[in-house]
Image (cartoon, rainbow over all chains, first blue to last red):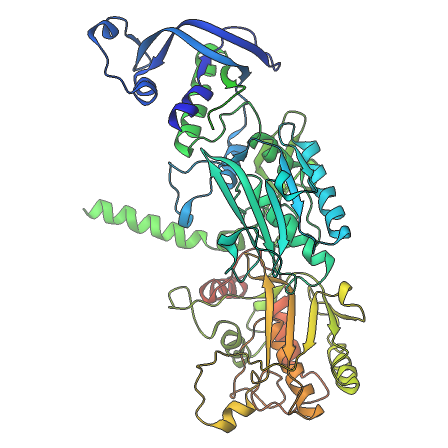
Length: 296
Length: 278
């Protein structure tokens, strides 16, 4: 996992002009990585020859990697956000176990399109209204695509009610409505919502609960007590729930190429600190490399 | 050492003195808006690519908690029925539970017509209470509160709950009825189902039970045999046709503010202190 992250988020100091445009790259070059990155990525002991090529920069020892072949991918500039935004982003994106802040906690995201299958019990009206909401998210977030599929085999997201076929056996003894997400390397690859239709007896109530659970599940987000209840990121009910401007910005940022995805809180904070320092020192923007094909 | 203690004392004093604002005790929830003119807190700004968002939050007027408005007994009763006199250090902590949305009630057609009619008449008296609206609908689809009849055995307590005698069990308001409320993560209700077994009860008893259970579900209030008989939360309730003034006052205090955060007994006391010091 670490290897994948390191490759994905290989950081470069961009001496060129700032550009939002993504550029395809295939590089075969000599490059330097930090000692820590080298150990995590290669795990091989360093030789005397290696040490002769060491470079020292900003209290970091850099190791030369000869003929490094970078996979095909894109280089995207670091997306700057102010401290207030980042404060809230960290609160919603890093879902700590037992509410105890842990620097090792990683954010989760969908890499593939979300393909939703509804069980037969879900009414046409519920599906239609729900998909309107899903479409709003789909349109707002470039790299997250959501669609409905007719066959369960084609899906990676299932919505069903109590009493239906148990699509997720790990939820069959749950007495409350919730979702179950599965991920690998912090990439969510399957989620199931199981809803108690008898507790949510009207379509408005069903719709509310489905949307709340779905929204939470698309980034394994934490619902927080900082925002007014209209926000989907807030942990309180409102009959006027809507995707606020800030909700959309937080979502877009979560799925932005301008940050490393699937990182731990520690890495996330470290990268922002680094990016800030680089910008202050050099006026240049840090860049993130995202290969097209990532390790699964 | 003396110096350290002095600084510690100063710090603690400052902290205590600073707890004079509601916002220090109940964290306000922020809305981020583009219009700077309606912002209430300019210290929290979010700069986006094409916009700047300013924060705003609602402020509370705590006058309603001033002791001069109600008797000492009133708040004593209120703190019992809401918190059971617990505070933040108690083994089990109770919080204020509120409905944060208008309540739209659907009464099951299986319930006797006269019971439905009188129930509706009784609760239609509750009008003009800020943040609490109760209305009725004839379509379940439009409701968020379902009063449901069942032929199954239902009780609002666990099967192993021990009563001193059979009569106490039979007379308990939770015998033959229960409610399940859907709450968000902030102790606010948004839907509920009150289930009652109408068999083995005459209509008067059934109506009394429904009235009491529904009232309890307006704030997960506790019943006591210490309350006056006119109070719907008294275990000796006389089943009056009129909502008592003290019950209305309870609802007024309970719903004057929909609190942004969970409020336990300790927080409530702090809010009362502010109300009485200002």
